[in-house]
Figure 1: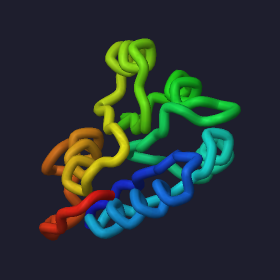
Figure 2 (figure 1 turned 90 degrees about the vertical axis):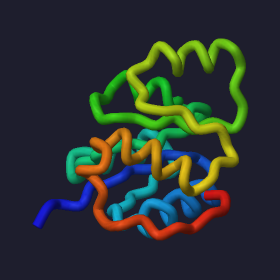
Figure 3 (figure 1 turned 135 degrees about the vertical axis):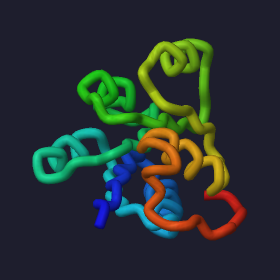
Length: 132
């Protein structure tokens, strides 16, 4: 049996974390959610994420700061983008960029791209619309 990929979610907004965690788990992935980049870094020695869904704008350690420390595929999420933020995302190694609010299908499409496409699908995806 193939291991199910772990999708880590780092966002300082609790409602966004809960919503993304529901989407990830409903698609058959294992999900881990963290309120800060530091919280994720504390978990990292014990866990290994196949993909990181990462908020760009957080206090203390930003999504960009965390991105610069990692090699895991990253999907950036943000609620507001200025020209400098968009340029930095475009120049990064990030697999994708999602602007809040985003829908379930868009989130899962970006995650599947990050973890290796159709070969990484944990299960058949139910067709559920709506925002994440």
